[in-house]
Length: 113
Length: 117
Image 1 (spheres, rainbow over the protein chains, first blue to last red):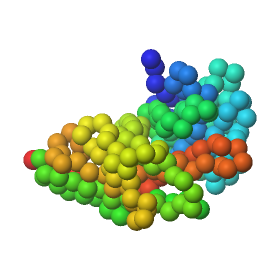
Image 2: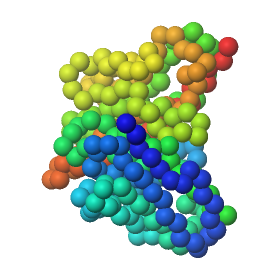
Image 3: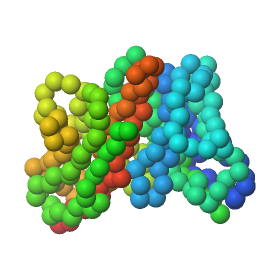
């Protein structure tokens, strides 16, 4: 049973560019959340998707957007990249009708030059 | 707003010694609490969770935590650590939006456990 998978594992971009990160949830999960983890910090909640709609959002600018597909997979898009966007981006999945904890992928390490 | 405080940024300890990693939370509603571990260049792995019931929670790799509502704490303990326990440990609280029921995790800043021989 595959867990949460994320791609790519590493990515290098320059300021002003755009990036798309991808996530496939754990089998049986229908809700996907995205977190940003800056170096030396705890993960910060970006947003959450369920039934292809954004359901809640953290304190991130509109440059951060997302999408969820009918197969529950998800994308995180970041436009107009800034140096401060350099971080580990973590995807977590869960089942909507459950209080069970979120399962995390290994993340995408994004470096902005 | 809910928040999590991990008082120690780094905890050095010798192999086979006991360890306690401290976590305090603030929340005005019922909470679900978690400890996650992060090894270098990896994502987060769930160590243990408190949803309800017994306040002493046992997790993987010999870790346990105690939920203390009066002190709003959820400290993580292990009676005897191994070199392989060296990692970053994150305490988190699940915050539920009352009108929708959707939950998100609020994390502390993490505690780096350094186990030396």
